[in-house]
Amino acid sequence: MLAAPAWAQDAQSEADEGRALFDEKCVVCHTNGGGDHIGPDLAGVLDRRPREWVARFILEPDRVIAGGDSVALELLKKYNGIEMPNAGLSAEDVEEIIDYLAGTPGAAAQAPPPRAREAQPPPEMLLAQASILYTFLAISVIIVAVFTFVALSTRGPAASVDIARAYQLRRVLFVIALILVASLLVATMPQSPYARAGTTADRVVYVAARQYEFVFSEEPIVTAEDIARSRRIASLELAPGELVEFRVTSLDVTHGFGIYGPERQLLAQTQAMPGYVNRLIVRPERTGPYLALCMEYCAGGHHLMSVPFTVESATPVASHRPTSSLTAN
Ligand SMILES: [Cu+2]
Image (cartoon, rainbow, N blue to C red; front, side, top):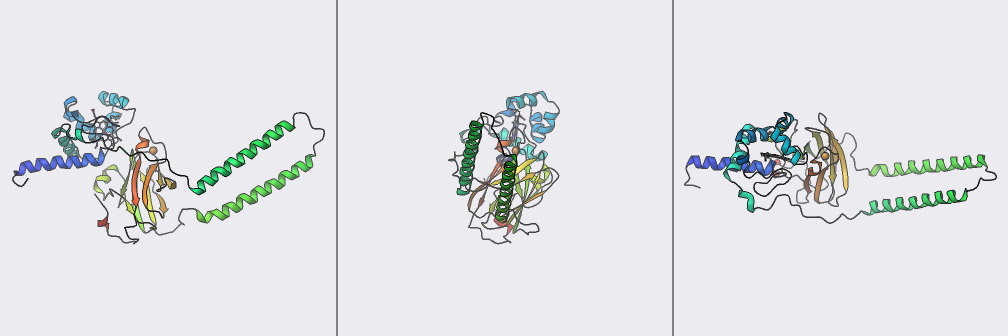
């Protein structure tokens, strides 16, 4: 490398940049020589399409598709109607990616296809959830039994029914049900995982949802272009017990931002709406792998919207951690 002439180093670093961009923004859906994934294998794409077309498509796939480009529409049909999202790249970014795709035909062929997530065993039900399920089942059995009993015992018309007594019994049952529900509500309300209004969080994380990912960032993201400019958090790490405020918005359609804990139980959720910022304040207690999942069907690639993050005890519970301990882009 040291002996290489400057121009060769430039070309090399261009392709490296392109590769980094590709790894960051495209590998969710594409491989370079590893076979078709959610989108087509991009090895040799420059042999089958003009470079200008490829550049335009990477720059603004949404507009190319909306414009009714016949190649794009055919691809769209072939790939199950999943529209490639606009990644908000600059023209230079696109050139770098194309240089990378052109320079290394099938370079990644040896690499295993990305995102082959290991299959996880089904989550164990927490005690609370299991008891709710069994209570519900028990009540269902009682209801079915009562209905069966009534159906069987009222085959013939009854001789005399004391209507006044029946109505009184109904009133008593109603009041009992009302008292039960109200006391349950009062008893469990303080345990709700949502923070009180006016609470100041130890840490603020900005979340921008778009088709098909959640982008975590140190600063607000309002447009797709902001993603490249902002201090993006590549891998989010939170400390256990830290009060975290997620400020959630969407760059395209309405998504749902749901947080699943290490037991893969839903812990908290809010909507991600374009033009609005929803605040979700949570205190993750358990350490381990977490997942942010989209909670609202948002288009063909909805199932792709799952972004992992971790809660680690190694990171001290301090409100003023240096930003350098985060991987910001
Ligand atoms: Cu979705």
